[in-house]
Image (cartoon, rainbow, N blue to C red):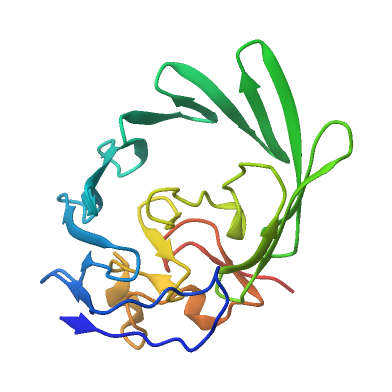
Length: 224
């Protein structure tokens, strides 16, 4: 299955349109994304991407048997996820906390507080000396249209980690693509919601719903 997306915007952080079409396999999983230069996306038995080609680079994801992401490999470096502790190769890089990140550089640590809106989107990051290190603004479906600051924080829309290699957002057992405002592989509970596309994000109710994980069956919560 092929699909085209057209965007007439001129924002450099906006959707980057290239020639070609999104291509999906027989299970409904995206295998080619020409706009990010991703091709030959391979999936495991859980329909999770484990191998991706990006130009001359290769990206690998490693999961446990439940589909939880354990590691990703890119350009000779491996990032490991052990609960709230995240390592790059054998060095502890940061610890995920309830209100931000504890960044670790050898024996030096720096706490970064994340100020969020009602949808859990990280809007402002502030360090221990009260300096603003990052500001982020988003389109309704999560694409960043303005960002500034020196912070390397990737926990942005809904507080989910933006993958540096693919720009996908990690929602547990599925990845979300803010460029097109939906997941790119099917909801495993899609048969319970047959009136909706299996790729939809919070039934399109993006202002009053949040998505804490990846399944329609248990992840959409109304904010009132």
